[in-house]
Image 1 (cartoon, helix red, strand yellow):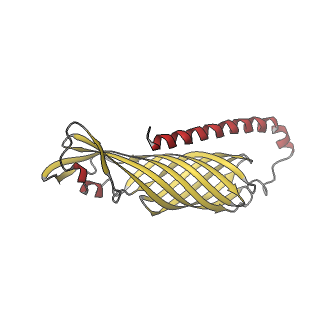
Image 2 (cartoon, rainbow, N blue to C red):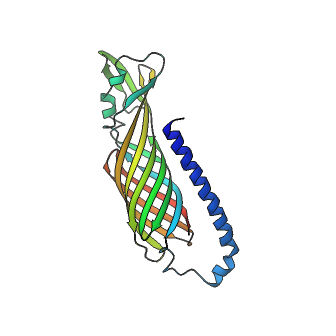
Length: 242
């Protein structure tokens, strides 16, 4: 089992525990539904308490892998000579600017307006198969090269702050992320897999809106500072635990 598989399993177990806790909280909330109707929640207090939250949603953005240090991880029958030192195809489309779309899971602790985040992203790249196709000199021989796939999994950590205004809580985070990136190139029809691990910093800002004290929706934007993130955006919903 790889280190990435161990991390992914740990995150999945943690999310499962939180979903169980949310189910219990939801049952208790439904039992007290009549009380909520009699005494509505004070909007001045809805977003001002210390809490743990879990959220899930969609992400979109762009990545740049032109400076990513890819290394050959495996190849099909007959590795092409010179494939281990291949550089030029990674500096062109789609590696220079590729669109990513996917899902995002976050676990967050908010204490005295300070936010501490751990999250997991599953972005999927979107590009035309013709991007990156060309002839390159590899090992002294001119060969046909095309990009077959680009994939990434991200483990994110964030530190930031928020300031609730009624049910709305604007926030700003500094996010650091470990990215496990892999790609497959077809060299004269033979598949060659490349992989890299990178770290990226970005700044993320947005707002959380509490529909109920235990349920919220949020939207955020992200700008890359260091690494392969260019920009990103997300829309998510989540549950808060006292």
